[in-house]
Length: 316
Image (cartoon, rainbow, N blue to C red; front, side):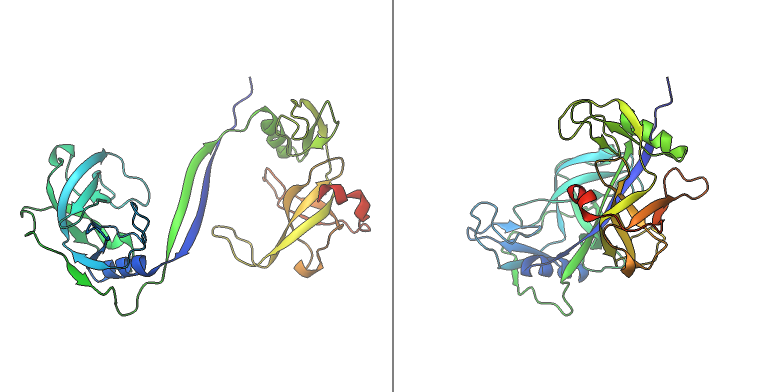
């Protein structure tokens, strides 16, 4: 039995979002070591504050300042912190109801072990040394020996600060191990031999590359392998003007759909060896391999006349 292919993959992108008046005030307040909550029409105080009441859906705009101390309502122990988590040593995830509030805030609690945390324990915010207007301005919670804050109404706050935070960048990241199936394993192994293979549908006789093990049109299994290309035709393309993280390619560059000769489905590939503004639909291209690579680095023009539109219009 051949070795099972497996590779670690990471999907990551920075998600940028603008902030409404409530979240803007909340995050700017954290930068200034002020915790703000939103007051609902029936007198509840929500931290983190919401733009709309989760019960009535009414718009919320009244802000109040609450205490940096609170009570743990529930918790779970994290014995192995991961990349990007608040602490790099084992800690507890806790839901903390800050004094004077009616909801709980999720964050980390810095304690030496699970025996040191319990529901009902008193905690307080440990502020980060450098703050920028993000929830990470709360470095974590830590145990607090003081009792509950004196009862009373939290003080109203205008939510106005100098240089307010208008947006945040939240990195989204997913790490996983990818294991290709039979069809893609054969495709990847062929690439190591600088061959490109597809699979032919036994019903419609179309050849799909990269193969998926089944025909996307007929829904039947495919097992018949056939070599395609290596040359092909650019069916459509886009010019990339934003440089991707960890991708050592200078912008602008061109990324296109390429219909390899003998294939009935266009695949993706970078187009090089030609100024980006000279790439065109119908241009004939061929793969360029680099030593030791398991896939083409890019596709370049072959110098052949452009393909007639009717030969690739069904592959757009």
